[in-house]
Image 1 (cartoon, one colour):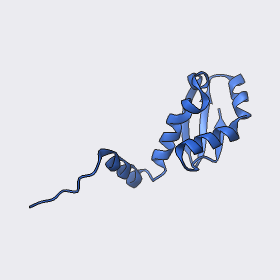
Image 2: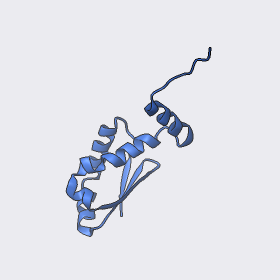
Image 3: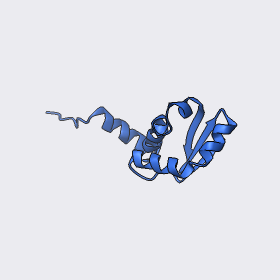
Image 4: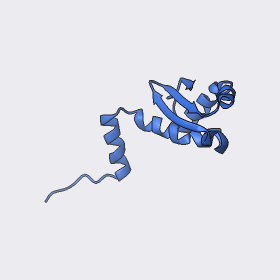
Length: 96
């Protein structure tokens, strides 16, 4: 008789990303997906692009005024995103 190791699909996906992209990849994607919840719908609607590399969140927005306002809130944004992810994955935000 053959027995199979049955695992939930979510666990298999997590294992795949940990093996092929590194264990922080899913946490980084979670942080990117949480951006609208952290900054609210107005700022989220003016966010053009988000990416994370080496613990740095790169944020591109469509307004110079908004970029300036966000620059004053970087440390709070980092703190809130890290708390919502459940671990410290971000150390800096670069606004473009």
